[in-house]
Structures are given as C-alpha cells and as structure tokens.
Length: 180
Length: 110
Image (tube, rainbow over all chains, first blue to last red; front, side, top):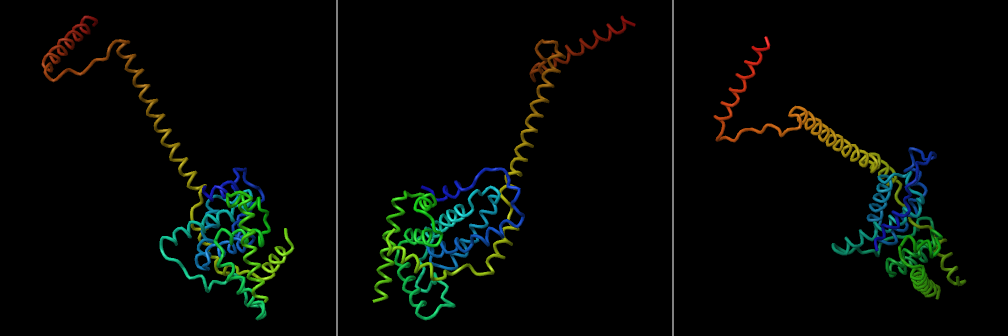
C-alpha cells in the first residue's frame, strides 16, 4: 500500500483559511522541521540524505498549497516517511552507506557520561530495522498513539505496537548492558 | 505501558536530538519561492482547456450557421454538386445556357 496515501489523506480540500499568512512555509518549517528531520535521520541514517529529503518534503507541501493541508504535522511526517522509503529503495539499488558515524543525538553540550550513553543508544538504534526506528521516533519524540502512528504508516495498530515492543526491548537491553 | 518502557522513553527524551542545519531553512524557502505552485499549474491547465473548448464551440457554431444558410439558399433541395471532371464541358454548356436564359429574362422585364 502506498505510504503517500496517508499524506494525501491529511490534505483537506477546504476553503482557504483566512488566517493563513504569506510566510506560511517559514512558519510551518519552524514548527515542524525538527520533528521531520528527526524522523528522516532515524530512517535514512545519513544527515545529507535527511537534509535533501527534508527540503523535498517542504517543497512538495508548498506546491500542494499550504492552505489545503488540514493537519500539517500528520501530513509532513507521512510525506517524510514516504520520501525516506523512496530514498531507501533507490539506495538499495545503488550503494549502501556506512551509518556508523551518523549522530542521531546532538552531543555537543553533554557531559562525557551522557555522550557515552548517547553513543550506546545510537548503536542500538542503528541495529534496529528502519520501520522499528520510525515507530520509536514517532512514539517517543512526537508522543503519538499507536493508532496515530498506524494511520501515518498505513499499518495496523497491532503491528505498530509489536514493532514498538520489539524496539523498546532491544533499547532496554542495550541500556542495561551499558549500565552493568 | 510498563514502567521500564517509560524509563527507556525518558532516557531517550533526555538526550537532545540533532536538528537540521540552520542554513537549510533559507535554502528551502528560496527554492519554494522559485518553484511554481501546483495551483498555478492547475489554473494554467484549466485556462488552456477552456480556450480549446471555446474554439471547438465556435467551430461547431460556424459550421451549423453555414449549413443553415446553405439550406436556405437551396430551398431545401439537394445542394449543387461540383461536376465530375469528365462532364466539365457539358457543365459549361449548361451554365452558359442558363446565363443566356437569365439575360433574356432580364431583357423581358425591362
């Protein structure tokens, strides 16, 4: 099933909103770029690809017309997911990248102990399949319910829940091993 | 949700995630300003379609008007058809005879 359908579902054919400002894209970017980038980075594992995908997602939103997007967060996350899947498919046909140096966390201002913790979690995240990483990001950082994640990923809520369970167990094991 | 799950989530949330580089915002906004919107393309397409439709309607209208005019001219009878190439001489003769007849008629009227 096409993941982009979920993005299209989030586009409402409504009358233009009078409150929509001309600088709507800038505001949309400020509000959602961090979440979209986080999901893209988790799925793609490459900052360059995540930046390219982020640009593409916001450009598509701009082309569709911001006033027609009823639920910007759902639309952008679904579009980001679709973009990431397309890029992953392309990458499988071309070359695989080494994600060992990719930093999911911004460790610039952290003390050394937390930098080590971040590194361990990053390693555990890297070992997870892409669909489990996306569930972790959407559940933990976007605080979405399984039903909401299921509507974005176009899967059943039970599938989302089992992906989450598997991923969280793996992460917990990684954290427990690191603390021992 | 299990308590341990909540702890793992909290640990994840406590670490700041990497964000997009600051220059990306400007790049996206500039690219969006340069690219034509979908609505503009849609409107252009609609304008082309309407123009074609108008031309088609005009063509049909003109055709009907011409047909009606021709029907009035031949008074409901079959329209005069062009002669076949072989009977061109016969057609010219007939036409000449008709012209003479008409001229005679005009002379008689005067």
